[in-house]
Length: 109
Image (cartoon, rainbow, N blue to C red):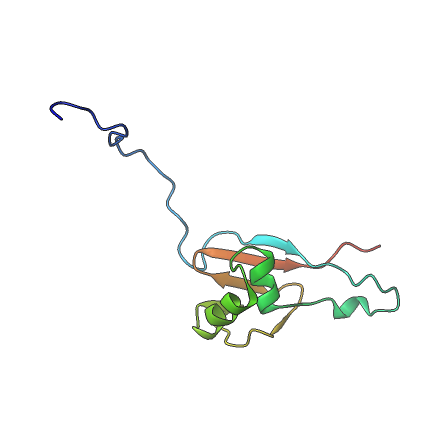
């Protein structure tokens, strides 16, 4: 054993950007998808909260999204949201841990 060096010696600390505190920083844009049905009302473009958490990769499954939302860890427009079926529309800002997403309307056709 003697003087063997560890294969991954500790590296000196480097200046790392700190992660933004909850609710701080510019939110990521999440573009809503328009309904492919031409008869659908364009003002009715929305996504449910649990679906958004799955789409952005914050949760792997709907069950995981359900637990995250019901635990009170998700904020919509700076208010705790406990309804996983909450319909989100363009302009809403969703926060979970240190991540934020702002919903953006789909581009006009």
